[in-house]
Image (tube, rainbow, N blue to C red):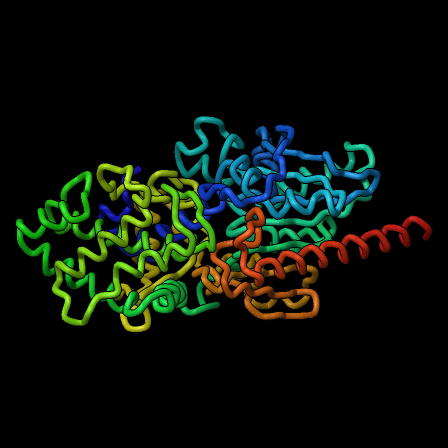
Length: 496
């Protein structure tokens, strides 16, 4: 689909929220295992469940096939635990193949693994090819409907699979999937005994966290990865304006970056800046300690590799500065040198086409973001809810409900819940909207200082920092405790 930023009315709509959130959800799916990853085999059954289109009304009585994946090689029934992945906004097979933590602990726990696909994504389309045809068909794309899908699916599995009736279920998810895992435990404590919510920004909603914290975290990552790295990125925006003020400058910049489509006017320059901004955000989320694959292979600690090109003196000219920026961008888009040109439309957002997530962000998932150019390395842009709402109306004919997520899921008033782990990497900009402190003895925060986006859910790696190894060990020990508690409760109920 075309870049949303192509239309002025959608300016804030794109830069403020949708552009960034759409790309973050795919890092787990797009970043493959490194050569040092565990050789844990990934083998599963693909199954389908007849799911109601609408769980909360009675007029729409249709059903659809919800896809889910099951791996029960290590399940010791009867009563063995079930680890249940709450699917994100994407194809569930991607998440299944990359959530290494679940595969690695399955044998230790004797657990069955179930990966449930989120409605409207992958193959789980409520109205088939018409699911995205208009807002009427998209009307049933909500997190509440998805959670109800998960609950109904699990109830059916537990009643139909021999030995599973008393199996304790633990929800696991990363990013938006992590939000769903936390909310699943909150809304359906009768279904799941606990949840691991990795890199889950459940507080990235109006009035809960400052709108600028996301981009401040990105900036901090670059600031500590190389001398003057963030400072020179901040300077680059003005340098781009200066250089592109002439036709010859537009040509020079296009050639310097080896752009597949040369810049021709101010609108092209605007889109080019958005592409660079998205690049820096992407790098913050995939700043892993080992080589990994995204659009192309990335080096270990890619931001450090980027910042080597931005260690420039204070007297560097605009063109010298932008030469450094072009080399830095190539770390992300062309580290192997195999690309003949850089395609500014080749981003996580555009290449994966997240119309479904755009719709969710335009209804219930309103996540304010802003920059000020003082505490961050980006050009100033305020959060403008009215402009955001107008963009949603123009695109879908719907208006967002800014406060709805807080009403439905409690905002910061969640202390009455229990057995949820909120893990966050300090390098991950989404930690700004996550739970980063213990709320109660059973609503626990695990911070991973050297962690990028849901590093703890990835396959283990020889180069993993001690902090993520410790996080996984603690997560596993808490799983064991929840399973023990559930077994004790089930035993008490059976004798009463």
